[in-house]
Image 1 (tube, one colour):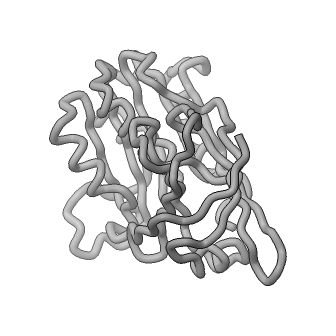
Image 2 (image 1 turned 30 degrees about the vertical axis):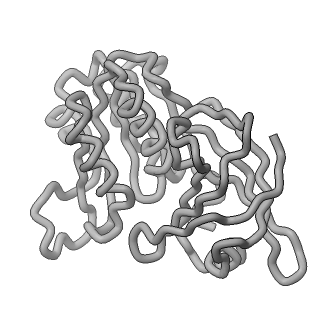
Length: 234
């Protein structure tokens, strides 16, 4: 479905990361984890980029995408948007989706790669899915934990959800987990990992590293679903 629209709301998630909400048109349907193509106007030209939908289909009033503002041309164009700014959307796309069809799930991600996980987890929480979900979420610093307030709120109402944040850089005042996601962390936080279907999203290097970790633990290839953030971090 392709349609012209305007920005309804802009949310600063953490420094350098913003969510953009657009009115959801009648008849627009998508699955949690899918992505869209966004077209903006910049210096008299149209520029496009594909971005994951960070909202859940259960959030019927809007469509949201979230972007780390990197200084690229597209990021600069996004950063100039305000309520009422024009945009064109073409969506939905992608097969990296989850609607509660697996009883036990592990999710591994880092940085802005968390966007499809937010959509999936919000959906499962809202529909009261019976799926057990554990998310391991790696950030450079605790100040970069996008959607953590959302995840904390969801954990309060979803007893089958567990979110573990780990900081890979200087921990500062952070007292939680530290270090990259590795085999030891998976074994510790997801003790029944061999029974789970895993979803991995993020930059290619991270996705490849996580696949290697899981295969080293004996997780079958058929139980590993991946989404590469191609073109990251533009």
